[in-house]
Amino acid sequence: MSNILGRPRIWIVIVVLIVSVFFGTWSIVKSDNVSKLFRWPELDSKVVSPQQIGVSSIEGDLHSTGGPFLTDRTGRIVILHGVNAVYKFPPYELYPDPGKAWNFSVQDAALMSKLGFNVVRLGILWKGLEPGTAPANDPTICSPGKPTDPHQFNQSILDRYLGHLKQTIELLGRYHIYSLIDMHQDVYSEMFDGEGAPNWAVCTGDVPIIKATGRWSNNYAMAAPDVAYSHFWNNDVVGNLQGEFDRIWHDVAAYFSNDPWVLGYDPFNEPFSTRLVSAGDEQFDSQLECFYAGRAMPMIPLHGTPAITCPQNDPTKGVIQQIENGDPNHLVFYEPDIFARHGATNFVGPMDLPRLVFNIHIYCSHRSGTTGNPTDLSACENQEFNSMAIRSEDRPELSSPEQLGGPAWFMSEFGATSNTSLLGTLTADADYNLLGWTYWSWKFYNDPTGSADEGLLYSSGKLKPTASDLSRTYPQAIAGQPSTVSFNPSTSIFYLSYIPNQRIDTPTVIFVPLDIHYPNGYCSVTKGAKVISKTNIQYLDIRNNPKSRKVTVRVVPGHCTSAS
Image (cartoon, rainbow, N blue to C red; front, side, top):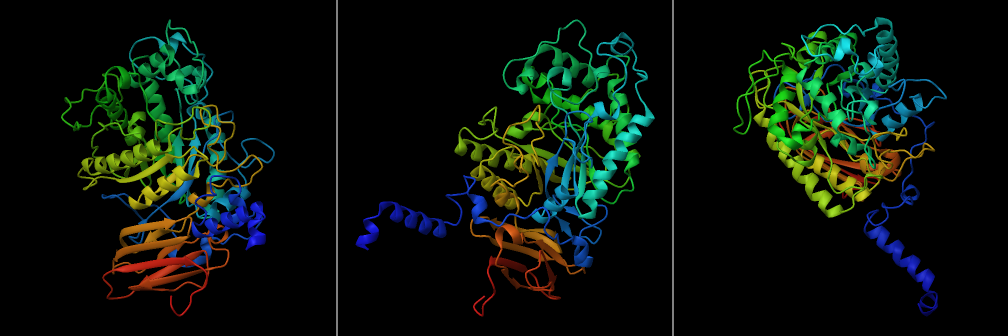
């Protein structure tokens, strides 16, 4: 001992190693050294395709008939984990195109599959779908008057765009990964240092376009984008901005209506208007509900707000009905306004429409404008936990005859950070709430309206330490009603409990991330059910015992022993 004590550097190393073993990876995951503790999946390594697990795999249309969960064709409750993949520069989409910045490759899809992701929120942009030829503030479009056809649509451009998108969806589908098609926008248009609308759909009148200094999001406070947003939400120019947006959505939905790997559609990313700031959420949310449901649908205001009166030129049927008319099979993931991500009250009320999913984003206010990382970790953790709890309380209030008990819910954005502590807390909160999610974002793609540390991969293609929190053991499909899901990425211990549904013949399937958390295998212990899959396989299948009233599953690293 005296020799060791005489060498302080060696003693420090030994202490660090002991602490690391005792606390798992908790004290180390904040650095890039995490890659030394985990065996990151290689891009060219063998991928266990979900097709190989037979009847337990999730495939086909998913359903949201009422209650918090999505279900599959067999009645199992489905939980989705995945990432966002959005390209905001021309050609405004990701598809297989080797050597290009927008290339989405087999390696991307294969690595997503190895991480356990079964959904991608895949971005599309209105400017890519319908770029048009007219400039901003064209008087034949932006003059006040009865909305009519703006004559900017080009079928061949739309077909080419959707053909590229279909390549990506088919590639993901080969790995049993669903696509949630997201009409993305931030600050309305590129003309305001954002992305989304084509130039022809920008109407600012005599208000000059002056761009804000500092972070891109400062442009939300500028006068010109406020005018452009206002014309869109009120649909008060002859170019029929809302109506044309809805028509494009109908065409997109019709194109993919029979695609088995399309999960659904997100009509409008993070809806914003300065009325949120100047008049309060309830004022804008009434406009937003009119946009979603159309001015002909009876609307029920929430939280004692006045009856909703839609702008007189809004389409009779809203964007959700246009999507559902184009595609009667898939889901619509509609969002509350942008401030709901910080926990603000949601005033978008119930809509008596089928196949809806209450689609939330969760971010905190205490983040770096450059990196996206928290400037106050504790404040971020508390705010995001409370925001998730508030959205959980909102969901049953959205009950309608079509969806008794409210629609299912889903967290389609969170993260945008390299802080493993924050991600560990957020993913644990999602487990606690039995909530599926897509992390923002798969890659940075030099995002003009994002944060520098948002990508899950470095520019080299190597995974960041945050992959250890996002690649989790979790139930992808549950043959019953779940009560508890938990996973500790530091210890790799997973626990699931659920009430079995004996009417469901297909097994519960649990994804197990072998490469990252179980390089030496795992042991699964069940009560009320039995394991029917092979030992140490990436997809763990559990079949309910015929008379069991409760099923529990525990997964721990290492091989099973007699004590297990």
